[in-house]
Amino acid sequence: MSSLGAVFDSFALVGDQFVIEAPPDWSQGRTLYGGMTAALAHEAIRRAFGDLPPLRSAQFTFIAPASGRLRFGASLMRRGRSSTIIAADAANDDGQVIRATLAFGAARESKVVHDFLPAPTVPPPGDCTPFRKQSAQAQRGFWNNFDTRLASGGRLLETSAAKPEFTVWTRFLDAGDADPTTALLAIADNLPPAAMVHFPAPAPISTVSWQLDIVGVVDHADAWSLLWSASEHAREGYSMQNMAMWSQSGDLVAVGRQAVAIFA
Image 1 (cartoon, rainbow, N blue to C red):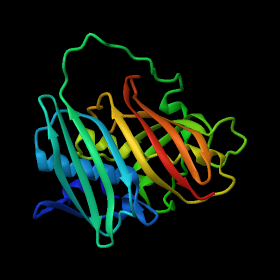
Image 2 (tube, rainbow, N blue to C red):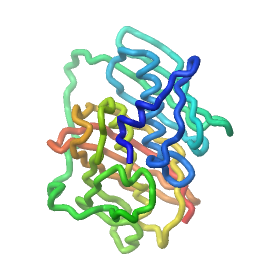
Image 3 (tube, rainbow, N blue to C red):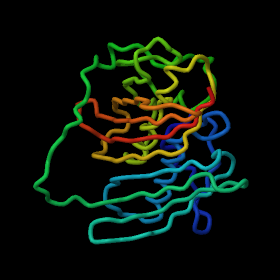
């Protein structure tokens, strides 16, 4: 099992694109899982443009399975006094797999300061049971790179749960020397869609789009993070979910929304 940092060490600059073979240990079925594809897009931007302000917001549309030899390119859309907007695209031999728009912005003084999204009160990670089954016989895939503990809410296929939502402690088993912001994108999407709590049986899913607004980045990628996801509406094979992420100390890290195709 390779560390997160080791994956990015294999990124190679070929012409004006960054190229990598999709690592099987970070896959979800026939594709890289969305968080890793998003992280690779950010890593390509970071390497192409060097010193950038902090990432503030990112939008990802997942077009096709990210598999095989992936080629990431980045282009500058706008550079202002405090903000920079960059687009990133990736393709394999079958065509485009992701389109992303990332907004970077320098901090500035403001008289408006508030926080109305506190971390939920849940037991610490050591008092929580594993969220996913973990064993040496576990199927190969991205989930084996994380330690996940259910803090509150339902489990997958728990149709009797009051709501399709859960709050889960999660951390990398080995983040290596990955960039903290790249690591944030890789971990913020590591949970299955909350709608799966109400699945009557296992079934495929596919993320359509993901937006993540970032408040701050945890300096240590190996630290615990608290992730919350809730499906607000599901019908006609699609689920719309709300998401949030806090540090172990209770600081808000990011909020997000996701549209998910469900085949149950």
